[in-house]
Image: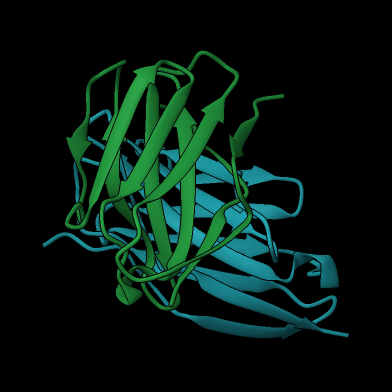
Length: 112
Length: 110
C-alpha cells in the first residue's frame, strides 16, 4: 500500500515562529503536493513539486515555502507563522502519469 | 477563475440513495474524481471517471458525467451510516494539477 506520512497530527505554534511540516512517501512518486483545508473552502493548493529540487506555486503560496531535497520528502515551511495560517494541512503524492493522488492523514496546525 | 462547486451539506436516511452533485468549469479536464474524507483522516480516492465517459458504476457507487453541462454526480445506493463523511469532487488538468471542490458533508441518519 502507498503510504504518505506526515510528521505530526497536531501542532500548536506561536505567532512569528518558523514552522516545518514534513511529509514522506514510500512509493517513489515524482509529484508531491501541499494543500490546506479550511471549512467551506475545500482544499487549496499551496505548492507542488514534480521532481527533486523543483517546485511550483499553487493557488495560495504567500507566507509559505517548500523544500524537496530528496524524492521521498517534501517539506512545507511557514517562515513566520500567523494566526490566519491555522488550518489543516494535507500532503499528497502521485506518480508522474497523474492518475491518483494519495494523501497523508493531515496535520492540524494552530497558531496562537 | 475556474472553480469546482458543490453543495456543502446533504442529509439522508439509512437505506436511501444519496446524490452528491458537482459542477466544474475547465472543459480540458482529463479525469474527474470523487474523494472521501472520514473524520480525522486524509482523503481517499473513492472513484473516478475519464472525461470521455458518461457513466461509471462500481458496486453501490454510480458516477454520472455530463460534459456538455460540466456536471458530475455521485450516487450512493443503500446509504449506510459508515458512508457519513465529506465527499470532495476534483478535476485533474495540466498533467500536474488538481482542483477540489469545497466538499459535501454527508450525514446518514439511522
